[in-house]
Image (cartoon, rainbow, N blue to C red):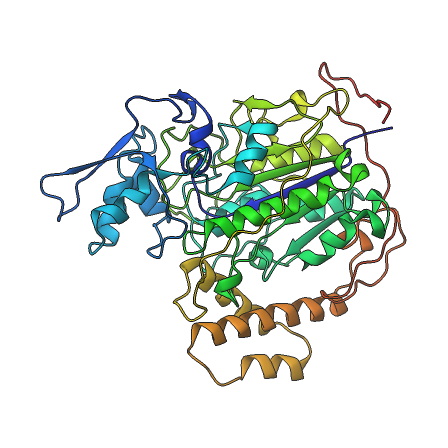
Length: 506
């Protein structure tokens, strides 16, 4: 009996909806894209050097990477959207031009650029999946701020009032992973070079992305070996910026499109896994790029730990989101979502109890995909082509982005917590090599050493690694070891339209 047993989230980096998917949909003031518009949205550059102001209109861009990373901290986002209580979205270009006064008009135009559909498509795999499956054209980041707070929302439903990437932030709240463990629902976090979950305290155990690909391979066992909830992370370029594929502006956007393709193909090639899966492709935040839809009001998740000056009653900028599954119709869903919608959907789908992930997750106005699920899986698109275009060569010795620096800072902090004194001293007392490549290599070594140490000191059930929720708990293997191929219990069938559960034949 076919049922929706696997929820898989792939979270990419730093792009707005209009930039990535706007070319596919006609304009709506509250959603859609910019397809077919005679008069496209604009921003005036009113920075000191732009006298008189220079108008920038949305236009296709051929640019695959941007070296001057657009700003996306809370203060900058509020300048981009204007007053968050009455946003105008007219400050993107001016914010970029003010931050980087030596940029030229072409560079500033990138804030209004978008990836076109058709012959010059730079993200053809994302666009194909969007056209063949389900676009969510009102998915917003959880707050108008940077990567870590938004990713923390995806894992916990709140950022506890923190709005930046600071090492001082104490994200000690309950995560979805604890909630899943309490309900014996299997899960896995799969990283490519490092995991964004380094900010959570305690950090949940993560394993290499290669293990997800091994589990998805039908030659290695049944689909039940794949955890019921999987969180997948791209390569953030901490060690090797040449291998970065997260689509962060300082990397080649084409590399990220190939990664999206490879994840989809791995799931799609396994018929049993495909028929039981929903792949959510979503971006953590907009990265400083323009979007025409004003952020809507929302519910504050909790009483914040600190006073950041922001009340969390407005969502962040709209981000790309595509639901890839035979359990949803091809087309567009225009319900309002943010990252907490995934958490609420997991609660609904797996019947989670005995936990609480904040007021926003619990609120009746937070939408999920449950009502859109089909009674039975539909016929869907096949595998994506496996051609590999040439990628732009990126030097491993270029300066790190703010996000990469934040990951490295967290990794250095993790190294101080390694219980094995010999390993800890080796990784924290090493002479400082100032080169970006050496610093990145050290950070990845510290991260993996911490994971290995934690697996020894804090054993977790096999549910946390391999999806064996019903198996007897045993010690987890170090991160590079292959997870055990044990069978996870079957979960409930999805709720059909009308609220009834269905168990259609395969």
